[in-house]
Image 1 (cartoon, rainbow, N blue to C red):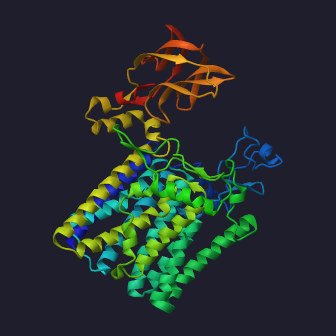
Image 2 (cartoon, rainbow, N blue to C red):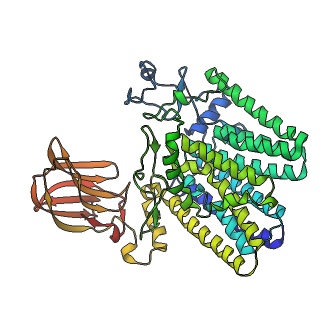
Image 3 (cartoon, rainbow, N blue to C red):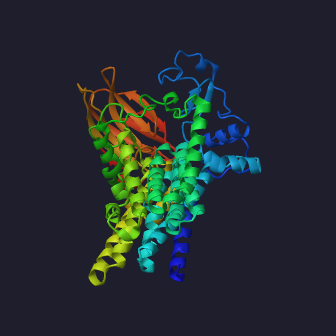
Length: 569
């Protein structure tokens, strides 16, 4: 690696690592060191492994076990449950892969005696995954003889770090994110080792690739797609020496089967049918009818663009699109907005200089996408399973294009790369700020406002904490035959904004004051009404009067709203 490449790599990696570390702590949840009783699901799994059993060390409530069907989401709703775990044979298990526990949580506990903070584990997985992905990209460019300038390389490395939906993953950290982050790390490491093995033919690199891609399956079972393409590439590229790749891969596969057999009596059972979850969420509904809505949500769902920081938001709730019954969708932004250059990944398939790796990277990503869209489950975090791979393929194709063109076309290619990367970085950082539930705004509103102030020179667009609000307006309250909700006033944005609206209950109009998930209601007489909404900053209450008489108060502490986000009607 030339010194300029080295300097660029170190600089961009430092920026990426700094952001990743900040991202997992930004919402106010600091790393909990020297604690042997953390309750994160992977902490519990590691505790169980360390104690010599495969179940979580939490006893299910006896009243739950006494139910006719403890897995019925409508039964025992008032009983304590470990949501999204598996209840089988009077024990709790995880249907999420054990890979993260084996890779980090259990070793840390055995060596230190303490639990590993889940947020730190996700930082390690994502940053290490990024470093391996960056190394793979640089190696692919070298293999193709593509020499790019320092600024182009910096843009490519930024795309790998930020245009991948990983910033979103860092915002809210739980068992889901660690399973996905662990899979991302294992795939990135596996591809890095596979490329070295294919180029050198050395068994040690091939074995490392097989081991890591096997562990990817232990994190996210469908990532076996990547392992399958890797095995084909090894068999075609190094022939008999591919056995070095296959042995650790098969060994991990056998271990996964034994793990499932010991838990559920079936080597192919991961526990999903025994999941404690909501209606229709415990089964993969693989069907063709899911494909079109899956493509829309995973690739093309448009975000909301606003004038107020962070300027790019997920539509809340998720945008409507024709979809079959039991289709599960959360607020989501399509991958084409996260990385507008993704179509270039297909071009990588036609660049012979990139070797067999182009097929492994791009076809694995497209196959993983195909599986996900067929499941009927669309959520932003799942995009990390395929977007980083497509970004890797696209950046490799861009690098070859730029290196092999001269003059005006080289300038055009560089500008297209720069513009699309900048757009993708902005979108991903915005989603990294908001996350799935705007938890930075909820838990650290003063921090959110401080950050927003840096990027909001116009007072009208500058978010404020507990802003001064005084609004007087008239509205006609009607008895709506179809019980249509009528919005009267709003400040801030969902899910933690404030709303005042008229709804209907038992055939009567009801005034509803809502902040977050809390409602205060009051019946209101139909007719022309004069409303006044005032935020009492001294008591952190929203006060609503109707025709001069106070009708309700609601505690509203931590409201964040720019003047432009205060809306009447």
